[in-house]
Structure formats: C-alpha cells, structure tokens
Length: 130
Image (cartoon, rainbow, N blue to C red):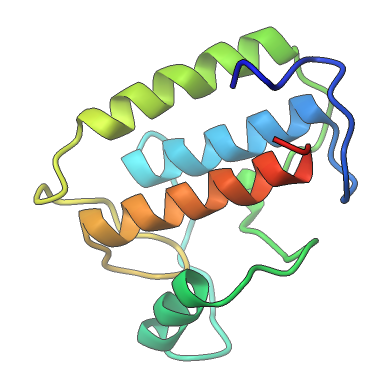
C-alpha cells in the first residue's frame, strides 16, 4: 500500500481513495467475523456464485453488500493503518480454520476466502492504478 496515497486518483469508479480503503477493510473485517451482514439473496445458487466470483473478471461498479458501502469521507491514514492491520490478522488465520458465514456465499473455506480477498484487493488497487 506504499504506492497508494491520500491524493491517489481513481482510474475508474466513484469512490475516493479513502472510501476504497474503507471498503476493502470492511471486506476483510467481514471475512474475519469482526462485522456481520445478514444473509443476502443471490440470483444463482451459492456454489455457482462462488465459482463465478473467483473465475470471471469483476465488472466495474458491481453492487456490494451494505456493510461494505463507503457512505462518507474517511481519514485516509486511519483507514490505511486499519487495512494493513486487518491484512496482518487475516494472513495469520489458518486456511484450515473455521471461517465465518459469508452473507452472499454462505459457508466458506479459508482457501476460498483467501482467494476472494486477494481478488477484491487487487480489483480495487487497480481502480487507483496500483
């Protein structure tokens, strides 16, 4: 995240850099069970949704679960520090451990969750040219 700064400009999308860092941090916090979101209805069976999200490119501006929405401006350095701490916590958790239910994907493995978070972070870092 050293290449990401408070003045980083978006390549696409509507989120500011502080909002994006808040958003990906919320995703990590959700994956760790630090925050929760009620189960969401999905247009396809969860097993198909899991395959699609890991194997197809993500569209820009795709909808997200409400708890991940950035609804205000945030202090960039605070969110950056939070995100880096969440990444450390996330990477310390064993893939074979039990992972919290996901509001869209239901029961998830450590491997799936790791792949999902990596793809999510990559998607949004690319949003800011990183």
